[in-house]
Image (tube, rainbow, N blue to C red; front, side, top):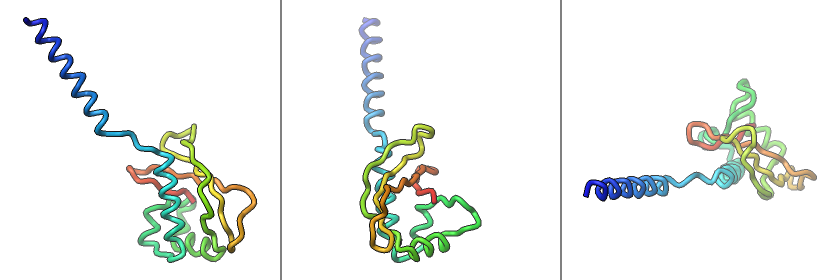
Length: 127
């Protein structure tokens, strides 16, 4: 009888572990990174840094959101399409998103690679 109780408890433990794992489904990192790229470039023409700032990691701290957004808008940088995305092999919290960008309404010749990083659970584009 004790042996049966132990087996039942072990089975219950495995069941509970499986339920816990399935309820916290893993994040599809490439899809999350692609979404932030699409949201950023959709909001870029408005130039609203209150909205855009949360989607950015700035390479140079001396340049703020307004400067970066103004420069991108001055060159009329727009997202043509997302070509794909892969987790960066050097950092599991970074995704490289391949894009086709438009500059002044004309497609850039080569694909543009954007690095998107997860910071405190939020995906941000490193510019």
